[in-house]
Image 1 (cartoon, rainbow, N blue to C red):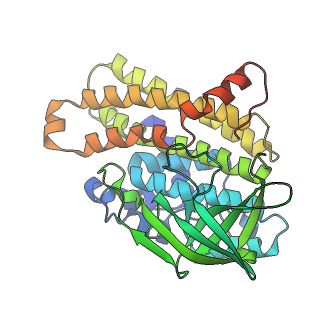
Image 2 (cartoon, rainbow, N blue to C red):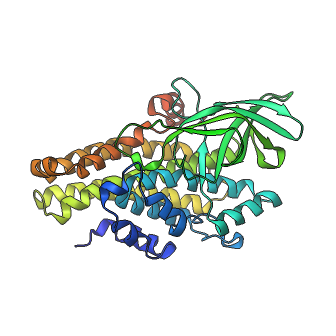
Length: 375
């Protein structure tokens, strides 16, 4: 049986990476979601690594709308890969904007596409009380570059990454600037340490990366603008991340509902109710993706509306995944942990930055007619 909700996402994944969904489906689910999962190596070898790189730079040139569908399809098939690949894709999307008019960054984009390089994101995350634009890295000026010291935990793609993107602050006479560093994975001073202990999303390679005076030459650093002002490069990064991570988790939940539909569990009305919530979430993401595709300058309130959709989706996915898991029945729960892993994985969206509680003041001001200010 074909689950109608996933037909378009899977068709677009097939267009951009022929045969890849079938390859993932041939891997047992427990293996796909294990710490030693072959899904990420398969993604690097045959997946849509260059999805968001322009065709002019050797990439697939996919739209934001296509990317939403691709991440949704990956989420339904391989939750850990969907989350991990989101970190790569949004980093690439940000780099595309940074590369405009920059020959070095343009060459890097082509190298990512041609050599199928994976980018890990080392921005601040998982540190209670730290602002979303704060850096976890200490920077020490050096001749021709900077030394970075700090850690990122968790950091998805920690094992398979070819490049690490990390942020640091540069002091200037007019205030701190947010800098983005692109660091080859084999740079001396980078070490990998076990960190992730939850069986849910264990295959995302989300471990700890430590940097000990890692040298980054000036040519591999990009200024993202003043720390206190959301510049276009920063805005683009947030928009792409929230859009793609929301699509990934929607897909994870859809994979659970697919089993309910395929098994004809519970009543027709129950299955339709689950489908209604999934379709509503996808339609919201599709609308915002189309707007992103149409407005290269990024509408000023796009991020605010995207966050509102994301936070609403968090609650919707909690309801849908709970009911789908229950519908699969107690015997399924006893016989296999697959559905339970999907259930736990579908709840992960609320743990990605920025948390709803951290954004309530900014979003309330936006809803009352004020400008949205992430900082």
